[in-house]
Length: 335
Length: 147
Image (cartoon, rainbow over all chains, first blue to last red; front, side, top):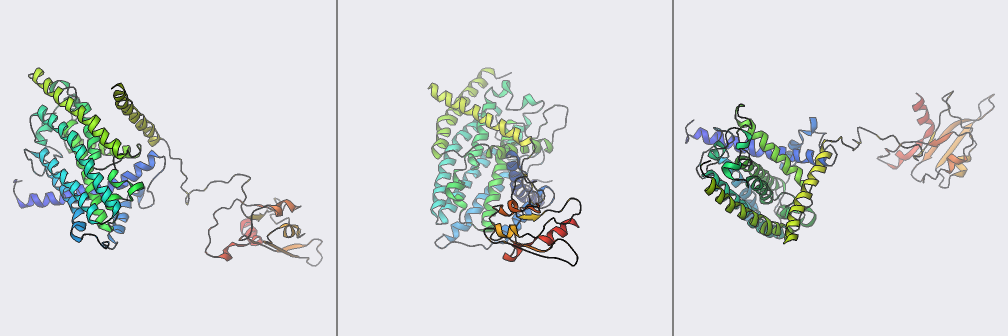
């Protein structure tokens, strides 16, 4: 199909918004409840449909039937624009994600840069929502979200620089193509080509993406026990629903990026098996499972603990990895 | 500086331990009871409301309408009545009503019953729409059970 045809745009909108964002927002909530239950040795949703599979539909119907109520004193424009400030960048970021070699909406040369540019808009949505809803908890949450996102964007970008330095490209599809062949050619395990620090980088990238998407144990912005629901406190029905779709879409993007940068994207782990979208999906869901699993294992950190982890541990370690990878590439170039 | 490394390495290790423990729990069988679909069998000494015990041979009650339970009850929840049919030697129970709303499950009635005609039931699903739902006709319940 031609790169610039209208049909491609329509397919993209339907595919990304309908399938990836809406489906994941609905069924990650289901998966979250199911996995949370099994971690705590319960069953989780089981009444609505087989294995509770129709539960997201029931939740969605409930959310949509709520009155869209705006509290007195809330800023009308900011209040209603904020959920979309979270959702739209997430949808836009999906443009460059290569689900397989050809299943990518737009193969842009600066794909990874674009994703991080849009990821910074996401926090603006939280800030506006928290500020606009004229609620003390929401404002505290917004302030926390900003300090957290600023703190974790730095190590995340340093890791991305390391990867870009090692792979020599910002095109996500090219990064995946370079990890062709066996499992030890994936960036996380490819000592000779990209240096021995990539596995640590992968773990730190994953931790940063947890923090960037405000997931537990870094969910300071939405700390239920202290801030009710943080920036979402005043949001009714689908206002809250759109926020959540954005959040879950961001989680999917974080996991997709980890897969692409370190775990070989759509490449199969063994050379003789065909590459394809199924490998991407398997890796993506394994990471999504870990994200959910982690949420139900660790208690929420304090704000100081959170910032200390970023400034005192992650940033020094990623900087060290950056420098050492640079040296490694200089010394061992040509292997 | 050594404390810093201890924090980083020890902290990371403890995170992995947490994942390991919960990972094990995830694959272990669930321990919760699916309440409306499943029920616990209550322990032998559980005290539900009192119930007439059917005689193992006849299936009828062994109550002799002595009225001791009625007298023993501190809250006056029990009202017993009986009649003596023509030619019979013993009284026959015609009415045994328990007003569970004021019962404190003290068990004086069960203790005072010489023929052992009443005992605690194991019933614990006792949600009801009105006060009247807790006035139990135990004789009727016995007949329904023996059916």
